[in-house]
Image (cartoon, rainbow, N blue to C red; front, side, top):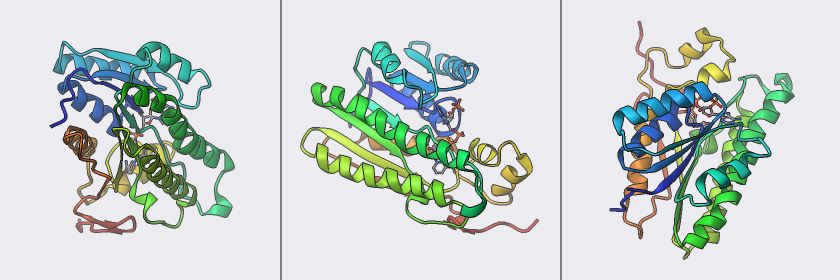
Length: 256
Ligand SMILES: NC(=O)c1ccc[n+]([C@@H]2O[C@H](COP(=O)([O-])OP(=O)(O)OC[C@H]3O[C@@H](n4cnc5c(N)ncnc54)[C@H](OP(=O)(O)O)[C@@H]3O)[C@@H](O)[C@H]2O)c1
C-alpha cells in the first residue's frame, strides 16, 4: 500500500461535491491539505468538518478562482513548493443549449476553468514533483470525455481535452515515479447540475429524478483507492457510472 500519511495534497474545487468529499477522505488518511475554491465561507465549513473528523489535520485554505493570475504564487507560498498529490478537480458545465444557441461567455468559462486552469496547475506542480522524485496527479475527466451528447459540445470538448492531456503527461513522465491518473464519472449528485442550469433547481433536480446517482463520496473512495495502490501500480483511469446509467443519454428511471 502507498501510505498517504503526511503527504501534501492540493485539491481544487474543494468547496463542494467531489472535491469536498475527497478532502474529507484524505484528511482521514493523514494528508496535509491545500484546498482551493472561490467560496471562502464554504471552504471554512469544509475545514470545520475536517477538523471534527480529524482534529490533528493540517488544512490550508486558498480562496481563489483557479483562473486567477496570482494563484500559482499563492499555492507556491502556502505549500512551500511541496505538493505530493494533485486532485485537479475544479470544473463546471454551463448550459445545455445546442451550439448555435449557446452563450459564448459560457464557453469561455468552461474552456478557461476545465482546460486552461487545469493544465496550468499541472505545469505548476509537476516540476516540484519531479524534483522531489515522486508525485500523484488525478485529473477529473468525465464520461463526457469518452462519449458526446447533444447540448454538451463545449463541455464534452473540454473533457476530451483533459483525456488527451492526461495521456501525453503519462507518456512524458514515464519512469519518473509520477503516477498520472484520471477518473471519469457519469452522473454524480453534487452542485454540478444547479451550476449547469444556473440556479434553476427544477431542471437540476430533474437530472437525478427517479434514479440513484453516484455521490461525491463514491468518487472520493475510488480516487483514494487509486492513490493507495503500491507505487509500482498505476490505475490509468476509472470510468464509473451509476448502475441506473448506461451512457450519458441512457438512464433508467423508475416510474412514479
Ligand atoms: N457531477 C457530475 O455528474 C460530474 C460528472 C463527471 C465529471 N464531473 C467533474 O467533477 C468535477 C467536480 O464537479 P462536482 O460534480 O463536484 O461539482 P460541484 O459540486 O459544482 O463542484 C465544483 C467545484 O469546483 C469549484 N470551481 C468551479 N469553478 C471554479 C473556479 N473558476 N475557480 C475555483 N474553483 C472553481 C467549485 O467551487 P466554488 O464555486 O466555490 O469556486 C466547486 O468546489 C468537475 O470537474 C466536473 O466536471 C462531475
